[in-house]
Length: 409
Image (cartoon, rainbow, N blue to C red):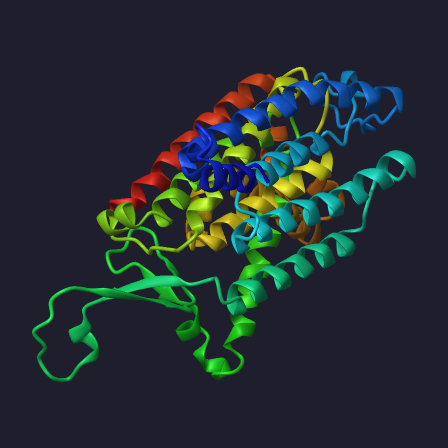
């Protein structure tokens, strides 16, 4: 909104300083600072409100050190994150940008699914919350919306630069190049020199009119996997928010270079028109995560709940899909992946031991003392803050490794 206001003032009245709003870098700074301010100032007010309404976390006794002390800590704090993302984006981004619209929808959509889960847990006193099937339906529905939009919307293109001679059989004297904005389903393969994968070719066996089905399945899988990964990671104070902030910084860098012709040419990566506007959203996203840590760092004054964790995971997945870096997610979101795998391995190993040796043996011989993985380390005596800081360090290392894919192929 302010982008359009100051653009109008600049064009019509040459208002001093209004031209600054044309620059993405300036608006990123404003969005990040606004997001931090909202999450830190209004976050405290929301926490007080949640306490008055007695919206506290119900804690199951899992035998973890310090766990029962968290009973009654306000939950649904993800509303702080959502507000700190949505408001600055509306204020400083171009709202007619399809990528910005898609991410705003993703934020509200996944936060709504998580809010329903938190609401059932808190107000209906049902510890299970929203059923797993209902969550999957919400994630699949968003995946279909995102996939169909990226596939069909006319503004979702990549720019292909070419020489006029590329399209002429006869030699021509004119020197120079032009470009075409083309619809394409190509994405980036990390660490390879010719690093492009075309989904339309990958799913060509489905037929020319049906390969979109394969692409939709990929989109649904990525959104479901990453949002669930963030949800599982949100088990101890500050872990999910801190890891998400690290991931958000890297995605902001990728969005900036992908939306800037000079950097895209220099790095020899896909130039995606209008994707630079996503950096404003990323700035708000990182600011919201860091601002939330003001209250969520150990000992937490508020939990984000599924309202926040599902929204964070959904945003990360859709951001990566938009800038065509989704194949980097196993590296960039390595902490989420490890947490997810630890649960899957624990369940699989338990079922195997139960079938082979019986239920009592299976209970005594688990693969991990407890899953997800962060609870395993709690069980063997590590303090929460040490686990979180070490997971953050691992997240930073993976983020740097992801960033090197811009040059290492």
